[in-house]
Length: 403
Image 1 (tube, one colour):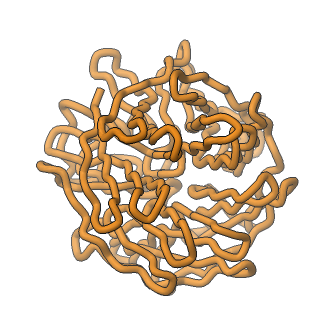
Image 2 (cartoon, rainbow, N blue to C red):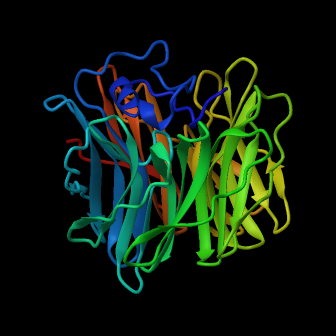
Image 3 (cartoon, rainbow, N blue to C red):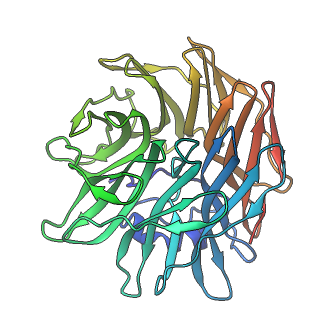
């Protein structure tokens, strides 16, 4: 098995990775990488960001308390016309030992809408005192959080939601994974929010022989059309996976895999219509290097499109993408690039002072001159929250808060 979640080559973050080990058991990349310095101060990360033109932006993730030795869900907001980020953490679940929005490395863990009500939905997982993992979701109404517990598939001891997309305050789709304790197999799950509660829906199908299937990216046009992308393991290979929701069931549409690689993953996707989706991710070379990957959906099939590289000894993974038209998309990861309708152009990628490695994992664009980006960066002693803003010409760092 190559991995069961997207690799994030953080310069720091051992505590966060260890705390979320149940998200991806037995993953080859689940532990700290060689050369990672020990975290002694902060272990704070954003795993998602969502924006609305009427309210502002919400970034979500997790943080580790050295006092309680627990991981908590992290939420920060920046209101419209402001550049100041303010912490608004949801209340902790009684008895939970670890709570977080999203799995490590995934950027589509929150979705914000303006109608009929202005709300944001964040998803992830939490662990109870018996080390069982459960689905987690919380709704932000721009004044307070409300925990809206999604049901877990049954029978399971491990379940978590990986991506969410809302088209209104009365429809959200979420996809995730769970460990079937009856068959001892990992399976996919999907849930729908109707404005009041979550309900389990049909499980997305997987190829014959697939193990550890995961759907990392999700984009919805309506309650009757969503595209989800990810990967799965089969033997020693890790091929790509995509699924389309039609309002009642999922169907598979397997993307092509780059040649000469050990495995690939699609981590983020943005759809403008049923005939145009832009998906990004990475591929692992035989030398365990990570190359950026991009694919375009034309309504019937996926096609690989060349993507820029961050260069030698740097992370070239692309974690998320946001499209406003077929001629404008912005993607971020260990680098950033702009889509002009036919190709990607690499952008100057800023790094905070003291950063050993910077990861931008989530992006939300309101216009071609306003995109908000969230992630984290590692220093010699900490993992710290990261916020950037795209102004139409360049990426600029903003000051986020750290608990």
